[in-house]
Structure formats: structure tokens, C-alpha cells
Length: 93
Image 1 (cartoon, helix red, strand yellow):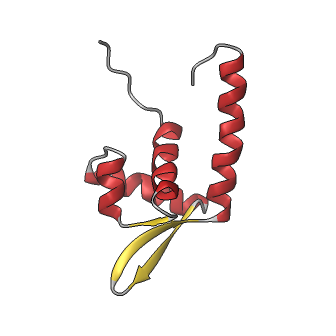
Image 2 (tube, rainbow, N blue to C red; image 1 turned 45 degrees about the vertical axis):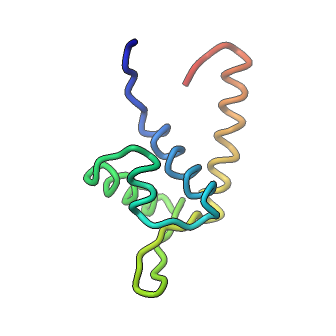
């Protein structure tokens, strides 16, 4: 079996979908394990998602959480359309 590296966009989507699946707000450790990332990569991708406005940091009772923003939800919705289109033409992303 050949190992295929995930693209940056796949990792973005894995993180966003994980947050959505867990009710829209999660602790960073849940993202770390759920998206199968190293700590350094987790911080890098969370930084990029924050910068793009797809997620936001929330301090709740002294703990840090990450929450999906409306822009993050819209990105997921639009990307799903792209996935469906590429599948219809037999192209894998």
C-alpha cells in the first residue's frame, strides 16, 4: 500500500470537519488526535485557519477552545460542491 500525503486543503478540511462534528467548538488536543497531526503541524495549521478567519479562539473557564466561524462553515460548504464536481468527472483531489 502506498502512503499518500494529505494536501494542505485536506488537513484544513479535516480540522474544520472535526470541529463541526464535535458541536462546533473543541479543545486543541481533540484536534491534535482527531486530525492526526504533530504538535508543530497542529499549531501551524491552526494559525493559518485563524488567519483566514475560518476558526476563532475562545477562552472558556480558563481553557482554550477553537470554534468554527460562519466563514469556515461557508468554506466547507463550497468545498463540498467542488468535491462533488470533481467526483462526477472522475478526478480525485
